[in-house]
Length: 351
Image (cartoon, rainbow, N blue to C red; front, top):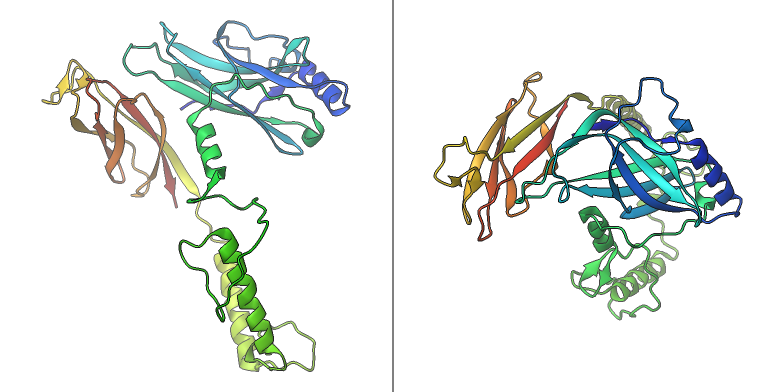
C-alpha cells in the first residue's frame, strides 16, 4: 500500500477556487491522472501546469464538499488497459471552469503504489481519495460530472442512505404523519414502521407527563457535587462517591491505546505452490486453499488486520487465523473458471 503526501493545490487551482467562491465561475473536477515522473526534492509543485509522464486518465467517481474547508475527490484507476507495470509517483486532480482545464492539485508519493500489468485473468485497481484543503469550500459552486465510474465505496454509501419498507438510514427522513397509539405506556417493537414508533413514543411521554403531575420523585434528588440550590437534598456520602468516580474516569481517559507498529502481509497464488487445488498457478474452479504469511513480531501483540488490496475477483478472501507473527488466509474460487489472485493486509499493532 503506497503512502502519499498531502495534496498541494497549484497556483492555477487557487485562482480557479477564488473565482468559484466569488461566483465568477462554476468549477468541475474533470479528471484525475497518474504520472511516473519523480519530481526533485523541494520542487515547487504550486507552479505546475500539467503532470509529466502521464500514464492513465480517469473521470472522478465521486466529488463531495465535506465541510467549509475540505473537498474530497475520489478516483478509481484499473489495470485492464495496462500492459506494463509502473509506479504511481503522482496523482493529479484536474478542474475546469467550462472552457479551460487546469491542473488543480498534485499528490506526490512517499512510497508509490505499483500498478500491475493486466494478466488477462484478475484485474486490479487502486482507489484514491484526494482530500483538498481549501478555504470557503461550502461557497464554491461545483458541477458534478456523472460520467465517472462508481467504486464499491460509492455504491455502499448510497446503499447506506437508502430508505425502504424493510429498513435503511432514516436519520434525515421527514415523517409527515404519526400513527396514534391507544395502548398505555406503549413501547416500540421490532417490525414497527417509523410513523408507528413515533406515535408510540409520543403516547408514552404523554402518559408519563400525566402521571408525574403533582408527584415528587426520588429522581429529583440532586446527585452531583456542584449544585448551590439549598432547596434540593444531596447525601454527603453520595457526593463523595460521585467525585471519586469522576477522578477515576478522568485518570482512565488519559490512558488511551496507541499504534506501536504497522506491517503489511500478502498472500498470493503462484505456479510454485504445491497443492492439488492449484493448476498452473491458478486455483481450480470450486476449490479453496489456505495460504500463510509471516511478519515481524512486536511485543507479542496480536495485530488487527485490514484488507487493503486484492486481485481476487473470482472468489472470496477469508482470514482463518492470526497470531503475533503470522496470518493464514483462505482463498476460495466459487466460479466455474480457474483463477489466480492475491490479497494484501495492513496490520496495526495497538498497545
